[in-house]
Length: 282
Image (tube, rainbow, N blue to C red):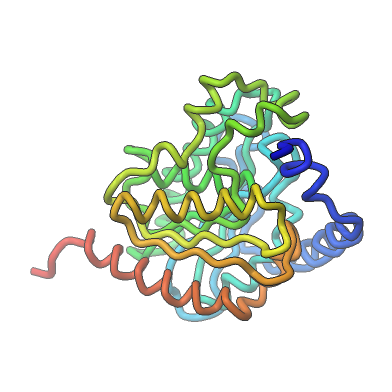
């Protein structure tokens, strides 16, 4: 398998520039209705999150981590997803983080983990009570969501993971131009590969991927679902027919087709996980 093709050239579509421009226009429109933008959770200029309050009865909290292979893009491009989550009753919080090569990938994960206590404090100050918490992400962001959910400290109080077109095993990236900025060696790539870190008692997970993505991304999705299940955790995986690495987000914003069925099953498991960690009623 040619890793450079599978993770770079083969994933690109000529439609991406126009599609991303559309995402930005929709995101700019969505930002007008935000509860708060660019709230700091750390000292770095990119340690910032947004807050979109739910437009339906409150069901939970969702932190969202953006794509960009840990080295590019910004949460402001993906604010257009907010209404789909708000309509589900979720507080939707897109999160920015420092990028490689300014920081190493290990430092990036450590930096983004600081958003969890900061967001908890922020929401508590705004009257948000005890509700399920889930972590979602796309591409590199899916890796970050899974990393935080599996952390012994950061994973406490997390009730679900939603990974979209994620890269969970990083060793193949060593043979690509992506590593020019990631600067991973074999040891660092193995340490950052969350597919190796899956443990029992992890929260319920939903793994989504575009059916028209390269075989490597389909395999990454399947491998994470398999690892989650083999560890005894609740997991569901789905491929969206005809969707590529970015049009899968268009499907997500509508929750149509197989995504709706996967979401319903996953959210029922999320709520059960949340109930299981709540103190018993006196």
